[in-house]
Image (cartoon, rainbow, N blue to C red; front, side, top):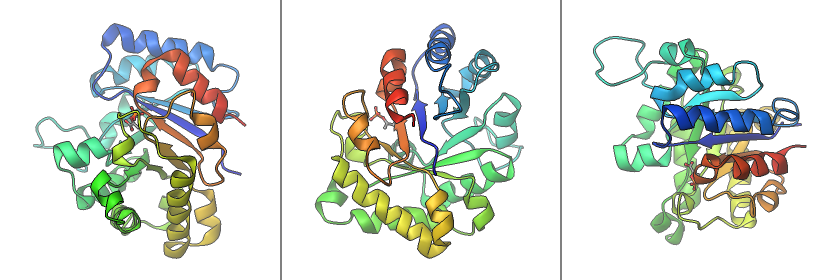
Length: 254
Ligand code: PEP
């Protein structure tokens, strides 16, 4: 049985005061279910990670970073290593978010190195994949998602894969208010699980949590969560409002 997982990606939002205030409201609101019925993580900007990690330290709410670099230390100006993220209290790290792929220019090869480095550093990566609108319209969704999974996870042992969460986030649904229908999302989640079963094996594929992301809101999360291969959500905009994020968490809790 896969425990539902809801993660909030705060992107480049909040400040030193509002990041702590937001997470404190989430901790209080989710105190009965966090870590038991549902795994909860928040992913603030790098500069607020430590303060947010301190604010959640007595709770079951986990903290994740939005990115990581694949080297351990050295002359990589502006980058942050897995060890640094561990040091400030991170458990998770988002790798290959579509904004990093399409705005910053990250490739599948870089993302694969980030996943490997995150795992080696004791972090739990959330691998984001998803097609652009043009790719969906051209009937290439399965091809794109297959490539992102195969290349993103290349060289990873079965043991390492068990620490990975996958997030399917169709790019056309991120921050647009346009959500994939539950059927569209389920079809791709099924494909991802079948692909993992082919690369690894079925029992392992059945264990991996596959989150949906793309304009998840309190009014659409329940029908998405009702799909058999959707195990939770990666939430952007709605994770910045404590009440909305808590409503999404509650609807995911078993
Ligand atoms: C995201 O940032 O991963 C995301 C899904 O954003 P939103 O929920 O705002 O579409």
